[in-house]
Length: 189
Image 1: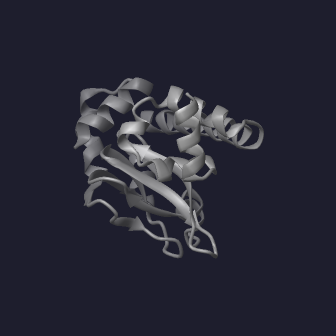
Image 2: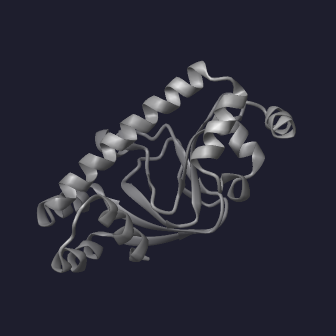
């Protein structure tokens, strides 16, 4: 389960062998079946989750019961309700599995211990958070200024495998459009 994590880490930082041996101590493993929740809105998010296999989705649910997908997390992605995790507040997001998934979980205490025991992890997470901010900025700009077709094309160009892995109605939710709009766009392309 840790191969995906180490591959991801080494894309960002250089790890020594003793650091590699130490890192797994801080994590717990969890398997989610398709549609099984990691946590739900209103729970307290007590862990950061690294997706080592599978795909999960992070979303909110409105008053009418409609889901609004915040992000998809596939192999090599971290997912959480960061506000809940950092501030110890109730989660505003829910995370569940789109397909059977395997996760590596780290609690806030273990996260802090990891950063002390393996200092290069501070740099790793700083790089991760910087990239996350850039991605969120791009997503906000796309959401506010692009047409539905432009949003869809950008998503497909960035993640070409998404059409095979994620159902169309979930892609529509992520883009803030209807499934019928996605069908129309695909037909026109």
